[in-house]
Image (cartoon, rainbow, N blue to C red; front, side, top):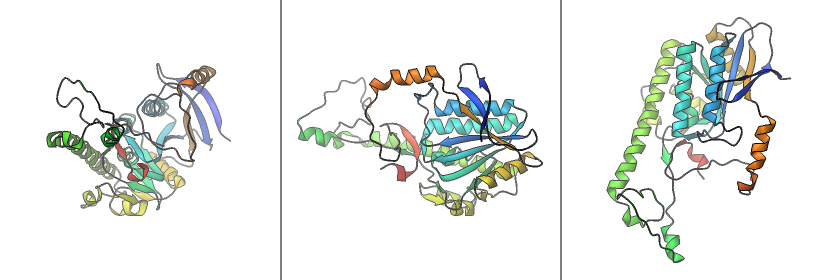
Length: 315
């Protein structure tokens, strides 16, 4: 049974409680940091902190606790916002270099696109044989609804300061979208895609340098960085992951990298929800729309925003 220690609060940050999820003798601990669902950087309703802020606070807590010898990044995500994914990856890289504690990515059923992006800087990556991963690429999604507007007799009236001020708007005729605008958007996509490949190359190269027992990137790994999804087994073959196994394998690997003798206690830092937070949620209920529960949570894609997102979650 999980046990909770006294709360901890960073100035201006989320309130965290240390929860023991698997107890063992000795003082050594491994902190489990979950990355679950769509990765986002927007403000959440729960306590006002987003995923990036919570993960940063968890890593800060793990860095400050001398008994925490390693971190397991437990990833089960189709990806999400570009900036949020990049910020998490930066925090992980900084944590490893400053705190000097290894981070092992433990991939669940899905760790694709942004889910792989945040895993790439880790010292070691463990995936299940059937994990869906890869999907290295960028997508910007939107709708052009001008045809529908014409059918119902609605015409947009736009006042703008420059010819590109309404770029990516969905209410323009297709012939109004110039080749120059297409090229500008594509350059942005290509630049972001280049950053994704750079994060993978640098992260995996550094990990293999520090841990030669892991898998090195295959010379042809870029051939697979075209948005396709890969199984954990395929990812291992081209060096995108180091080892096949479940969460227990990731725990053992973290203990090995950290030089822990025996079993370490596994902990999580969970955000505390207090009565004031519940009142905040109730106060916002009137502004919320009715939600139909279809048994799956779909990501909310915003027009004009770039995503590292697995293609199977776009429709």
